Image (tube, rainbow over the protein chains, first blue to last red):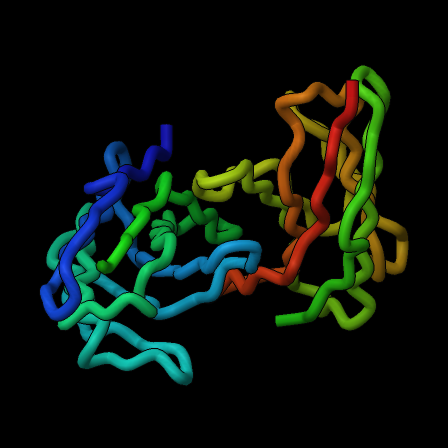
Length: 116
Length: 108
């Protein structure tokens, strides 16, 4: 159990367009979901934390108007990269937290975004 | 959350045990030690976690020192598919913050 999916797995878009990435917890209810970004040969960088039904909390330096996060239900969170530019090209990974005594987090397979 | 220190890279021969160290000298009493790994271009995979006692599961063993200031992840019989970046994270609630991890290269 505890599977997290992301869609799409990869996307190529033109500069200036917006791209939406979905993150779903398939077999559990996720009280909190997290979005990470990873550039080549670097570690994962936390972008934001979202709780169902409330506004996301963004990490310092992450533009909330550019990276729109919606956590509409306990199984779905979306990340929209607005007005994408080539520097937004990255590997975007979500994780979902299931409340237990030790707050397990389960990661999705990631979405490769390439902005031309 | 406490910071961790891991070696940048390690090699291991296929079939041998891989021992990956992690220092977390500022860990708090209620923080767990988590290990994740990331195979190239995939999402991180949970391996194991522990609080005070040593832990073992089907993937690995986790040895935590008595003072909890360091730990070792043991892959008992490393295979080529274990080649990945291994992250040691100390964590209780909230955010998982990833450091640079250890790149483990398993060689034939």
